[in-house]
Image (cartoon, rainbow, N blue to C red; front, side, top):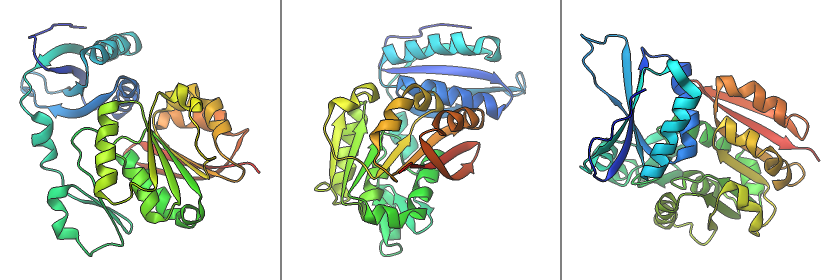
Length: 302
């Protein structure tokens, strides 16, 4: 693998090249780098005449330390499966802001997730309209794992309406916490480890008028039990298979009897391992899949 620091500037980046378009490898890569707080990913055009079977993805990080740790993890876990990984420090040319500007509203069932610039065209077209400024945190509704969670929430709308408390772990942009509040949850706790993403989530919560019902917590998942909040009737977690297995005991003890656990961000290769890990404490309820991503819904045993 290549490691070349190009310049001393502001945007820590990894350029990752894989042979062709092997979806299973990209799913593995997405699951791995999630632990290192990437804030944006884009496909990069390369000269296909000289490299017709090579695909490149550019991954943007909040910090150089996260980027460098992700480089080491890719090198350790992928080996020769990856053609090259290049460490780059790009000029801060507002790439993310320009990219986000192309986003449009996404409809999931009777719920619409829209950026501020596309809201006016969707006013009064849905009972549930969520405005998300995607400036920092993931959760615009454009990623399959987010759409699957929103779909599961809608399918369990009665559970949400009857819930006293919902816990959203890894809230990102705050979209799932906001959706829970709009669907009728009494109170919500939104947890996020990255302070920049959490700041964005708080802004989104305010702009959707649900700040009196959503509390935010800045913490790592491993330290969540140090905080006090009501026993959740519903737990939402859009993470990775590795995170679910690492924190299996935490998920087993967080919810109350007959409560729901909705998890997303799983790849196909992680599904069976996760099901086996959770089967002793949970009753499996439903499964959704889109673009190779899996969402599972469990119910805590009584």
